Structure formats: C-alpha cells, structure tokens
Image (cartoon, rainbow, N blue to C red):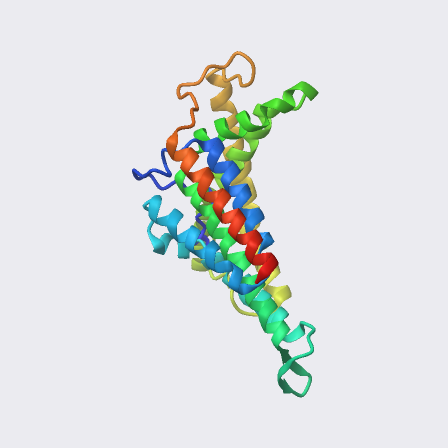
Length: 267
C-alpha cells in the first residue's frame, strides 16, 4: 500500500501539461480545489469529472496511475462514506434496521463528500506528476516573492515545501522495506487489537525516523559542500515564461469556475 503513494512523484513524458509554466499549474490547482469545495450536490461533480479526465488526457498520464493515487485513501473513503450514510441527519428515510437509519440526505452527503475527497486527490496528483521538484520550487518562489517586502523567506519556504513533497515517496518506499524486513523477522502488523497494532508500529517508526534524519543530514551536507545559496543573487537555468497553452488552461479553468457557480446556484 505504501508504494501506491504517488504524491511527490514525477512522471516524465512529453505532453502540453508538462510544458506549462509551473506558476500557472499551481494557481490552477488552487482554483480547482476551490471549485471542488463550491460544488453543492453530487450532480455538480459532472463538470469536475470531465475537467479531470481532460487534464489526465492532455498530460498523457495513465489512468491506472491516477487510480493508484486513491489506493492509500480507500480506508478513509470507506469511513467517510459510512459515517455520512448512517449517521447523517435527514427527514426522508430510506431504510431502518434497529438503530441503523439511512436517509436520502445522508446518502447524498456520503456520495458528495466521498467524491470531493477523490477529486481533491486526483487534481493535486496531476500537478505533482507533471512538474519536476526543481521547477515546482521555482514556481512557488516566484508566486510568493512579492511577500519579500515584509521580510518573508520566500525561497526558504518554497525549498522546504518542495523537499518535503519530494521525500514523501522516498520515505514511503523506505517504510515499505522496513515493514517487509520486520515481517520477515516475525513482526505482525495486521492482526490483533488496535492497541497491539499501534505497538507493533514502534519497530517500524524508529528506523524510519533515523533514516529520515540521516537523509536530511546528507542532503544538507551535499548542498553546503556545493556552496548552495538561495534567494538574492541566485541565477536560474530555466527562465519561467507563460505561453499560449497557459492562457488556454486559464480560460478553461475560468469556464469550469463559471459552470460550477451556475450549477451551485440553480441545480
């Protein structure tokens, strides 16, 4: 399951989305998240689903990879669906068995919040899978650079966020290896009570944290030995420049925003 985490990974293929300006992709991702939260009913997710499918097609991302990004969240999805289905309030009763009660409003909320979680993850995955970490750092730094007038460390913040995002799949792979090694020595992570499972994770977490601190120390030493210095006076190999494809993507997002607002008001 840990190897299914796609957040922070980069999928190197040739596509119009891969060649887009990272600043535009970050702003479009934020706008997409806002659109998802503006949806008021399950029917409103139809344009969201069409836009997500169009983004996957334009970025040449395999649909299996997008579905793989949802696998680590399947327990959370099931829990969210059941919680809203059986414990949601509503007047229109569909089914009742003893204390279990299912209403039409509860079913609507269960579908609504589950779809919201799915599209939030898929929309964020499109950006991280199509943007290299270095380019993502440059885009974040450029977007928050106006805050430098109030002494905000724009470059340091962008670097920390990108390194943290980049190390998510690395740490997930490391945790998977440690879990297999501990299982080969007789450790059991799947059976027993919740307390026993949490206790069994201690042999996994300790070497994982040790490995994470060691990787962080090696990265800091490597950057220091290369005289790394961010912020003022640093030049860049690739100059960020928006083009026609970025304008087209922004217009398509504006159209999606308008459709979602209209459906939220009249549907």
